[in-house]
Amino acid sequence: MTLGQLEIFNTLAETRGFTAAGLRLGISQPAVSHALKSLEDELGVTLFDRTVSPIELTPLGERLLSRAREILGLADAMHQEASEYRGVQTGRLRIGSFGATSSLQILPRLLDSFHEAHPGIEVLIEEAPDDEIIRWIEDRRIDLGFVVLPDERFRTWPVAQDQFVALVAADSTLAGQSSIRLEQLCEMPFIMPESGSARIIRRLFTQSRLSPNVRYRTSQVLSTLTMVARNQGVSVVAEMALPPTNGKEGWVSKPLNSVRTRKIGLAMHQYATPSPAAVAFIEIMEKSRDDL
Image (cartoon, rainbow, N blue to C red; front, top):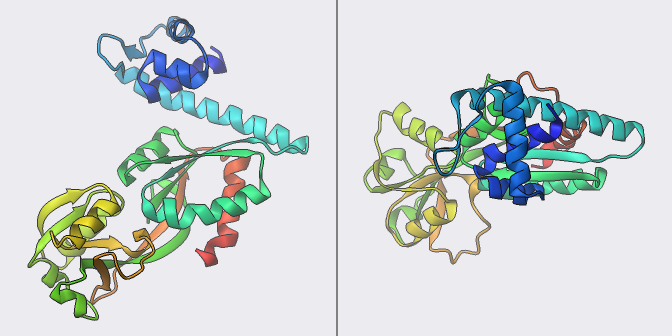
């Protein structure tokens, strides 16, 4: 078993195709097939179901994938530590980001400081809904991921805190209020954001024994904002997820009558050995936390 075979195994699991895996790795499709077959022969098991398209991991393949990623992560950490010993900082860091809050508000400032201090480290940002980020951390597909705290499944570091606000059309009667009650939002069609903080938003209503009239579900903040501006409904979002405004957007954000907050943190697999790049990123984050 070689690291090359494990890297091909991991890439196939992500791309779910031999040709796509070859293109990402810069090798031929037959080379990918040969490496996988050699790995399966050595282990004496089948890792992928090739009778379906795209290919799928077998149940055992899913279990062994997390082991492969653990080995690849340790190998990468060894290379990084050896590079540091030689006075050269190189390596790769994979970060999972769950939406506009982390991708647009938090990460850019952290990455500026990180690349200034560690210019030789390549950072890969993978974006997905929060539930997918959690799965990636559990599967060790990423080194670090942004999550909503608390989350006792992982090692976590607090990063920032923001509050939830109501979104209403700029020409609606609610736009003139200084704050908005959840009860008022239940009287209108509700647009439920399904990425980022959907579970927390649902919990806000449940804890108040309320049920919003959900008419639409969106996966992007931009879609939510556009629909609110067209007076198709109201919504609740995290304030840090909102883009800068110039007063002409057609929507406005208003505080809820009782402050509702969320804490955002970085998370790592509980049993993962952090690479030097991950340690360096966490150090940068902790130094910059007051500015986020």
